[in-house]
Length: 117
Length: 114
Image (cartoon, rainbow over all chains, first blue to last red; front, side):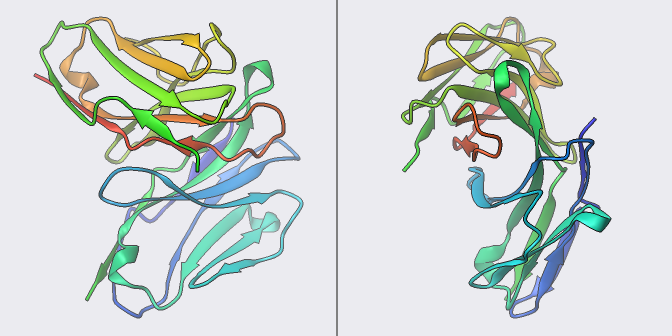
C-alpha cells in the first residue's frame, strides 16, 4: 500500500533561517505523483507543487525549493529565508490510482512549522 | 480559480443527531472527496466519488455515508453523530482521467459533537 512519512511533527525556527521539511514515500507504482500542500491557521489546504515520478529535476519557486530523489524515495521541501507568514502545517502527499479510473491522495501526517520573529 | 465551497464552517451538534455536510465545486470536476483531519493523524479519506451517483469507500467510512445526486455537489452524512466524529472535515475535487491532476480543497468544516 502507498505510504507517506513526514518524520518531523513540529519544527520551530527563527525568521530568516532556512528550513527543510522531509518527506519519504512508499509505492509499488512506476508512475505516480507527489504533492506538497500548505495549511495555514485558516484551515484551507493550499496547493504548492506537483511532481511526477519521471521528473527528478529540482524545482525552485521564489523562496521555495523541492528536492526529489527517487533513489531514496524522498521529496523534501526547503524554505529559504523563512518568514512568519510561512508558519503553517505542511503536508506531503502521494497519488494513488482508485476505482473508476480516478485517483486519490495519500497524505503524510503533516509537519507544523512555526517561524518566530 | 477553482472554488470548492463547504456550506458550514463551524457546527455544533448533539450526539445522535443526523448531520449533513455539503460541498459544491464550480469546475465541472468528476472526482470529489471527503477527508477527515485530526491532530497527529493527518488527513484520512472517508469517501470519494468519480461520477454522479457513484461512491467508493475510503480508509475510514464507518459511521458515514455520502450522496452525489449532481456533479457539482457531494454531501457527507453522519447518520447518528457521535463524539468521536468531532473533527475537521475537508471536501476536495479534481478532474478524472490523467494521473496527477491537482486536487483542490475547500476551507474545511469544524464539527463538534457534544
